[in-house]
Length: 115
Image (cartoon, rainbow, N blue to C red):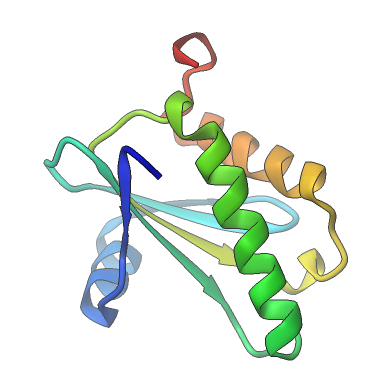
């Protein structure tokens, strides 16, 4: 990810949860908060309720890859946290990418023209 880095610290996740704006769809919940940087910081959360470690890691990779390929279309300067819902357990790549783009448009940080 050339314009983004990962959110790693629990306090960063908590800050986005408490002070950010969230929208949800069938597979994902997306939290957004401005970070006043020239890049995005992205975090992905998958609960143990979703499945075992293999399932959780697969879903994490799907979200990360979907974001990586669409990264040019996202505006910079935000902390973004994706929370994967239980209903996403059996989704394929195209469904996950569609859900991610849908949330980006709801948050008004996804610009189709810029990519």
